[in-house]
Length: 550
Image 1 (cartoon, helix red, strand yellow):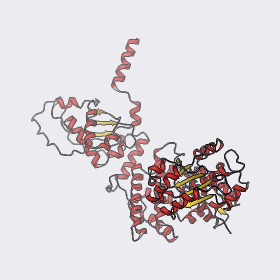
Image 2 (cartoon, helix red, strand yellow; image 1 turned 60 degrees about the horizontal axis):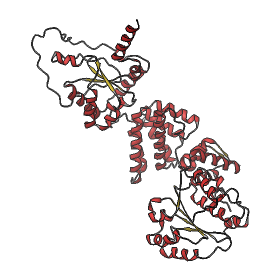
Image 3 (cartoon, helix red, strand yellow; image 1 turned 120 degrees about the vertical axis):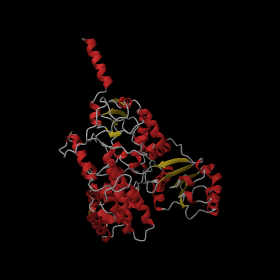
Image 4 (cartoon, one colour; image 1 turned 135 degrees about the vertical axis):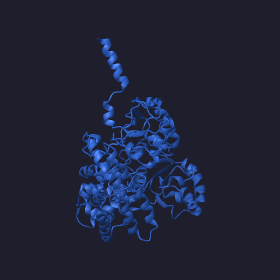
């Protein structure tokens, strides 16, 4: 009879257990030094090796010829435990034996000495399913069992266990198995089974398994049914997911705003029986990888993929803005919740794809037509070192130039009423300004002279009261007054995108207005240029040092 891969390739000693060295090494040391506890508690997510380690431990404590804490798997005790002929190792499923009577029977059996082995070992799987009465019945026996009894409890939900149980056991936390460990194990199993498994396909299985070795081997078992040559396409078909090629196609359509192609791709995958829930999950993970590739320089350890796929992720991330990637993740997360209760899952995903392809700001409002293209051109000019003010654009119609401050003003101009929410013009670099309004007094002109903005800490204090997220973005920033503008200097690359939203820009303008007492235009300085420029105090200091040296 055919045996499933996860059973056939279950580790037989601690050295074969992948991804849990902190558990296996400790257990081996205890066995070698004969410091065996009477009760163990193994906790962790599914498929991480809890039951496997429990069975290995049950053989190791009874083995006639142990090797460095490992069972020999050759003596009559080891073979008897493996084939079930020795009844001194009892495995109990607490999900179906969770009553008080079951635990009372166990207590009575525990008093009998082992028939063949040295220890009577009770492996209680899914122990969190026991009732309160069953836990209470187990307490005394668990604390002071007979010298020939060892309890091994396994659970995936440690928070459901009473503290009285936890305090009586040695606890071992099983971590999710790293994707690279799962990939290595899958390639080893495929080689032994005479199946050609590509490394990219093994990586894809490892990502789908989400840290569970049993899930990975079960999926590999399904792939074996498709042939002896397994690639990414075979894994995608077996798992019912889109695959990396379709995911990159989706992100390309989102970057280009191609509604038609994205909807056609959804229909194509749906007609090929692709699971909509799995597709939504894969899209979310894909945009998460784009987010990491966009923000982290050395992201190899944070993204599980091949080198070619990582290069493609970085290239695609460069074509998308961070705000757009974050917006897509939020849309997909909300869609995943809606799909669970939707009458038609395909329609929910199509609506999500339309939202993702539509140009929109971080606040969710639709961007005016052509604005996205203009912003992209400005960013490209800044990358090439071209100031937007020097671009070959048609000169605006010149308005009558205002009279200089020093010239006598004939009639005193009527002061303009103060607007409730002045909205600044925010740009990544300096832009051709409109003709500045006449200052109301010479004192007001003195306050806006070029130089460091000494009142910037007061502005930050105001922002902290109005807009805490904006205060976090502006932390460690400085500001200067230049050409009648407040120029913000910060190394945070997301500052420009963040304060472009109406809410944050209004709060920023409000804080500047309350500190300065007048309306000021606000711009974001080019961080690369700011690094090269020296402050006026630094220039003065250099001049004084040069004069003293002469």
